[in-house]
Image (tube, rainbow over the protein chains, first blue to last red):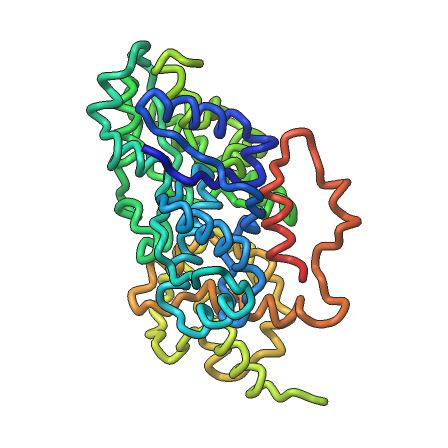
Length: 260
Length: 130
């Protein structure tokens, strides 16, 4: 099975492990991630203003490229996923935006939100299935207590994201069980790490990350996993105490599959 | 040309697409906001002040730089008001003015470290500059 793949800026640079192990692990399940040629940066944050067009164009170009190939579009970075999925919703539901975007882009076939946007974790759950992952694990991470850090962007707003229960998610814990480790549930797993505020107010990011780390640590976690390079940065660089190691979920997947 | 506060309030409602009259003032948005203690004006107050047309105070608020776009207020509002969109519209009303960018590209080198992801920089530029 083939997906069109939108990696995004950071997966090509600071978050190469997130990208590489996503692709190589997918191959184990017979899934090919075909990178969209000449993709543009999504901007990192969903543009909320109703009167902006230009900030949504990079997403529409990627969504339309997947449609032309007849593929669903797969993302790995939480932020790219949030932006692409929500812009896609807008293209389905906002007549004015759809008219202006198509008027500007002059695509061969107008785009109206037809592409299905799926996050890599959803692919593991819904296309491969956690039972099938378990069957392919050669190096189960037995005895390792791993906490899933969801953060914000995979879950919220749930009306558009449709990823999992936004207040009581289970998908990453089920993933952790599938690779043989023990999931640790902690109350701050869907609280914000501070995101881009590290550029504006580093002490605030530190405060947010210390609370998250303390909560994970007190609940017995030995490590955290994330799907977001900015969460990875904040948790690993802006935590000042109780510091646990943080991994991309794809690193542990590749390790369990014996391909790391 | 002088724009009245009432006109500015209408513009903010248009940019955000938010109907401030849906708010029932329960305060849940502020209660769940991870930046609450950093804000001089809180999310529920943004909604009320746009509704009343008190825009000048909002334009001077430091809260517009403290919103993390975590969408907790959007998720948890029982009335679907989407306060983050109002805060974004106020922020844009400031930075869209000539010379009002909050983050200058010349400031970036001093903020860099070896592990800072590109995502942080592009996100900050989307939020703090035009």
